[in-house]
Length: 281
Ligand SMILES: C[S@@+](CC[C@H](N)C(=O)[O-])C[C@H]1O[C@@H](n2cnc3c(N)ncnc32)[C@H](O)[C@@H]1O
Image (tube, rainbow, N blue to C red; front, side, top):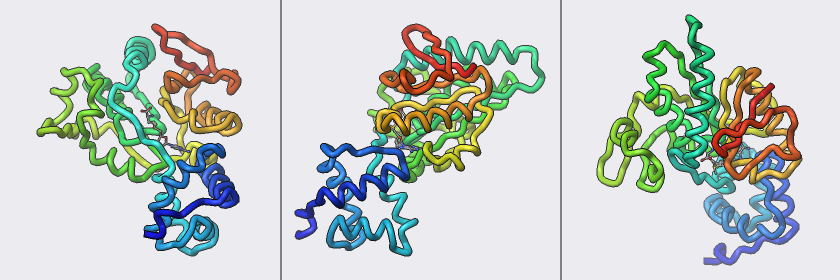
């Protein structure tokens, strides 16, 4: 088929890269042209277009362009995630952050815990948070738990809401959690309703200052494994948005290979058993 041999010129690559960068913050360097070509080819074909140049024109000027953007985001994002990803960070969350929050709420009549999981991808991270809160019996102890979760990718969010996972997603999950919080049927692991009930999913965009203003007063924010896709300018902007989502003394978790070095001095670095956590002062 002719479309399979479509090539993206450097000029079209630059125009598409700029749109993606402006809308999502994701930056494709020039040596990633082949990757962008591979990822967008299906969209060109599904829209019955003849070239990447026509696809660019569609995104810029077609009256249906706003319907295309979610597909564009789905095509350029990498949704890799799993339950209990990077176990030492979960240990730090439970033994340091959650412990501090629980002890500070000891004498309060109304106890509330607000957590933001952004980007949540297909839901494994916010559901891990939910299971830990349930395992600590926080709702029974009078805590009102709110876990807000979001991602740019609508297809990732649709899977998250479904909550059915394969073996690979649960590979780090302690057996006790697997037996207690999932319905296991053959190769499928379906998350139980009690876990789902604490989590609310919606489309969120880390680079959209207007939309990020909707998220405020969180005790903890998980923003793991996304800064790696951004350049320094976008990282600074995103981190300032994350700062604003947190309460004073709130905690920020980044991916284990990510850091705020040269990005922000607004947080204090706390090292808990080799796991860095950032605290808003
Ligand atoms: C590798 S996953 C990380 C998921 C999870 N936090 C984890 O660490 O396992 C990266 C996610 O970032 C999302 N993403 C990329 N740019 C984004 C943006 N500007 N706003 C919100 N989510 C974004 C992608 O859709 C993808 O699901």
